[in-house]
Image (cartoon, rainbow, N blue to C red; front, side):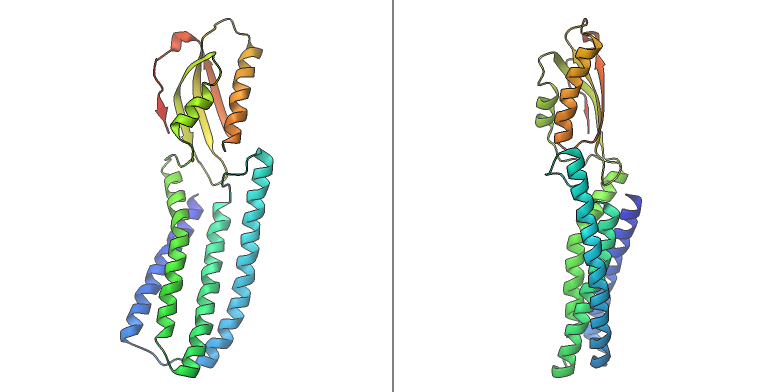
Length: 235
């Protein structure tokens, strides 16, 4: 997550700087050789486009592998670092496309400011798509819950067994882009339950949690002497 955050933050700052430079060029236009722009731009489009395509497929393959491993298909487990690298390559490819388009317009119509316009458009596009990853990685580093499950759903899931009186000391975290951690205590209403019976209760809860995107689950079983008559939720 640290690598993803730093990479995406650098990309974000770069885009803002490019927008700043593009605005400056409106007031201080420069004469550009369009033929060189088109040739170099086409080479860069091919190189960066292929790289972005490969990285995007790597991210899809990683996400599909996680889905097949954990049996749920509606949760996003893509690798944040692959996503960050993909955005970098996508940026380079888009800027290269902009260079080619700008070169064509400059060659035929002598419209030099088209380069600045395309730079701003593509930069805003990358900012829009990189912000979710920047936010996600930052919240993870701050140990703030970003797992998409509401408290009511989670509560119903945990206490669905009538032998579970309550749960408390709940903690949810996302230490990296692939794992959702959860830990909590459950209070049972029967002190005479065997270890096998306790495990059968927690196994059912684990299966439901895995279906909802959690892949590292820690459940501690307590007797009713630990009953707090409230849910202590820290997510």
